[in-house]
Image: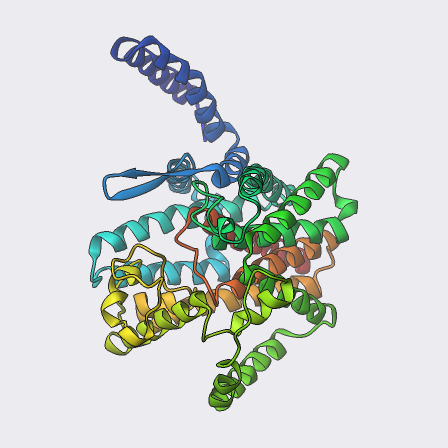
Amino acid sequence: MITSIKQIYALSIGFLMLIAFVVFKFPVYYGLLIPAALIFTALFIFSLDKILLLIAFCTPLSVKIMLGTAGINLPDEPMMFAFSLVFFLKLWQEPSDFKTVFKSPLTICVLMFYCWLIITSLSSSIPLVSLKFLLTHFWFIATGFLWGFFIFQQKHNIKNFIISYGLGLCLIIYYTSIRHWQRGFSQKSGTFVMTPFFDDHTVYSAVCAMIFVFAMVLIIKGRAYLSNVNFIFLLIIAASTTVGILLSYSRAAWLSIIITLGFALLIKLRLRFKTIIIGLVIAACIALIFQNQIYQTIRFNKSASGKTLEGDLKSISNISTDDSNVERLNRWKSAWRMFQEKPFWGYGPGTYQFQYSGYQRAHEMTSISTTTGDMGGIHSEYLRPLIESGVVGLLTFLMLVFTVIKLLLNVIYQSPDKQLQLYALAVLLSLSTYLIHGFLNNFLDQDKAALVFWALLGMTGAIYHQHKNIKFI
């Protein structure tokens, strides 16, 4: 970004003024922060890929700090915000470098999704909440997707990002496991021992599942592209995330991994994108036609979670005695009533958890229901845009998801570059765990999951761009 000696002089003078200000205005020990600030600034200027890796490592380790009624995750969110501003500054200075990013069909889908969020924020029922939602999505998308698209053009940065995030996550897994051990590995304590780094076991397990699947694909199919050090790091990450998933007692995480394994088999059989879409449509139609019979079958399921893996999976359909499942139904029914009232514009991005309480029915509420908007959201990554941004919001999100799947399948089936195929497979399977998990939970408003999700989309854009370049040479 520095292109002339004048800019270097200006930067040097700025640093000297900063040092003078800190020395004269604050106690001497504040001056110890200056070297760290200089190193961080130098990374921004001279090594943009390293700053993305630093953000990836710091994100699992970040802690939410409350500033009045608002919260911010430190240190990752200020880093993402600054990194996002650098992107647009660089875009303004050197627009030709980013033409490939904005010509991508995936970027068009992302921009449509975000622009509709902006539009529905204008009619939001709680404007300040929607504004905060927009801001956080701004730096999630700019850092993970826009910068990712640019930085992941160098294929080794894809692997490095997963390793950086994974190593940071390993530290949290060790911390969580020790706290869990101190409490006898009980299921109840397994839901909160990851605090203050993760809000609860659901987002923790979802992130562990994404990183686990990506690492396993590289270990099993990509040994030829890994140095010994990277291979060892990935083994550590895979083993640690396995522990994290096992001790999280998250049924959704296990279900997402099992279904992803089935999806991997379909990819092995080279199932086409159109076939997958037709299969999903047929499955949805069957579910609608036989919904009463399905309900009658599962309403008597009283399987409890926490005993065995089989019991955990069976308890997913327990809608009679499992408070967690019954509460999901309560929130989904509330969401449907909200949708009927505002089907087009929705209630505004980020507002569901503050608005749904008035749409609950007493006979549908559970012991964990709330009327204060302080205990989780809608528990669905697909219902959320529908309720908060209307029908168009859901359609833009689905278009984004299906575009990602289509582009990655094209690379897997058509690319002559085996390494691109490998990364495309790893991204698709890793992303699949989250998209499946998204039927039961929603985490794209949380930094830990959002950075990985948008980075996977950035990897998709970079991989497909490289594939197209190879294809037409």
